[in-house]
Amino acid sequence: MSSSSTVFSSFDSEGIDLFISTLSTMAQENASQISRPIIRRIQIIRDREAGHDMLMRHYFGPEPLYNETLFKRRFRMQRPLFERIVNDLEVADIYFQLRWDARGKRGFTPLQKCTSAIRQLAYGSTAGLMDDYLQMSDSTSRECLYNFCKNIRRLYGPKYLRKPNYNDVMNLYEHHENYHGFPGMLGSIDCMHWDWENCPVAWRGQFMRGDHGCPSIILEAVASHDLWIWHAYFGMPGANNNINVLNSSPLLNDIENVNTTKHEKQRNSNNIQKHIGCDLMSTNDRNQMTDNSVQKQCEIMMYS
Image (cartoon, rainbow, N blue to C red; front, side, top):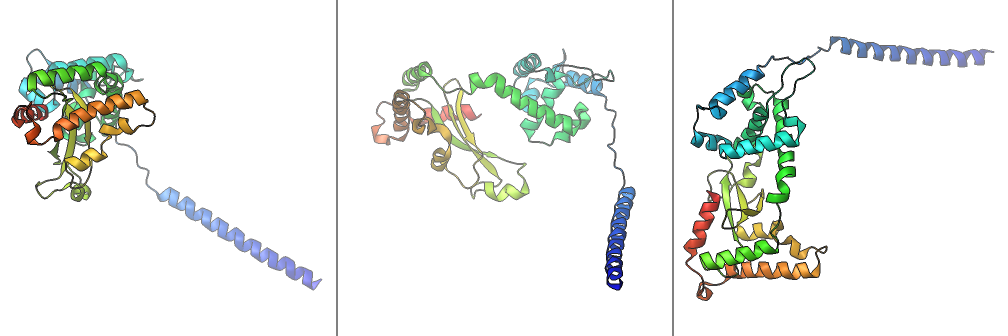
């Protein structure tokens, strides 16, 4: 009888201790939840209509405040091209159409959304930099940038990001041979360094070179006589030159792609060999070519 009471008394003491510790834990959690401050989002009543009106007065009105030169400098393109892009996006995606919310308040216009995206791309600025000008919050600006890039690739990618077909290659050969005196030239390939003024501090060491005073990104591009960019590759960190950038870029991947047919491989290989052979020949073998300054002038025109 005494042993049985001892067992029950020990069990009761353990259960009481567990019960007390559980209550203590619950009380601490409730106290922390009660004392935690409730942070609410600050609602800013932005004047979207005023932002659109200011944008119209500055750039898109009958007599804009800023001329075509300033427009091209700030938007990185001519006004007709920008207006064409805005119209195409407005037709292609409902996001870029003018709409009203559930409160009956007017949303942002297509011009405001596209301007926000272009300014972020042109200046590499943060999403909230244009808040006081376009009356647009950070989250909305980031949303505009994402939808802008997605739709630009969807609309214009099949035309402007395609690879040259057989007719394109033949036309390029004919033009370069007749106009520049470069037989078998497919295009002009070159690399240049773009200064990256807004490079993050943590990345500056990866994009510095001894011959450049600031961080830079090396860009590899292939362009034809009409300034059509057939290939662009950039973003490699480190001290790079033309050779190792060419080795890492996807320019010649089609030749090694196992999914490409044998006929396409042979045709692409011949085209690339003609182009690279023309570019890598010694100066003694350039009897049918003009001076190198002709090619240099084309490269300067492309990058300007």
